[in-house]
Amino acid sequence: MSITIKQCDETDLTPATINRLLELINAVYEETESDLWKPTTSGRTFYDEVEGFVKEKQLYIARDNNEIVGSVKFTPVDDITLEFGMLAADKKMRGLGLGRDLVNIVENHARNNGYKTMQLELLTPRHWENPAKEFLKVWYSRLGYIPEKSMPFEEVSPHRMDEFATDCDFTVWLKKL
Image (cartoon, rainbow, N blue to C red; front, side, top):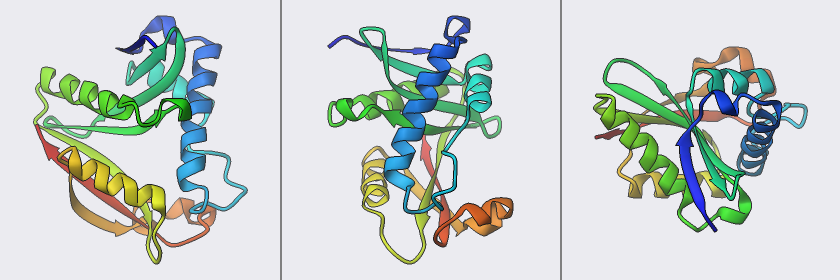
């Protein structure tokens, strides 16, 4: 196993790369969030959105011998806060530290670019516990993230409420760098 992680660039702007990223991100979110969304929902992201992230160089991509096995998206929130999201690791890579490595590299990117705070957003069911989301809460806490504010998802994205199978909350987590 020879894992490399690098920020995407113009060489990644190919249909094969974008389709693999799309497949990976949607597979991870299907596994962890399928019970939050109605079955008719098409996935966490779509081709044009992923292509835009690559064009804007807003992804780190992990490869194992040239095969894409992980990714993380990052975007500025403001002058001092960088957000990461769409953290995805191939199932066969779980438990090997790839997720932690992707978070570390995006945190280092933030520090190197003058950001003082990292942010992530976590969607969770309001009235019951999703095991994957409960795992993430503990995992993000171990990495130093603290839940700062939580709100009903219908207040954040009312236009998407028809896609949900259950009531959900949206929590912003922060970490000082």
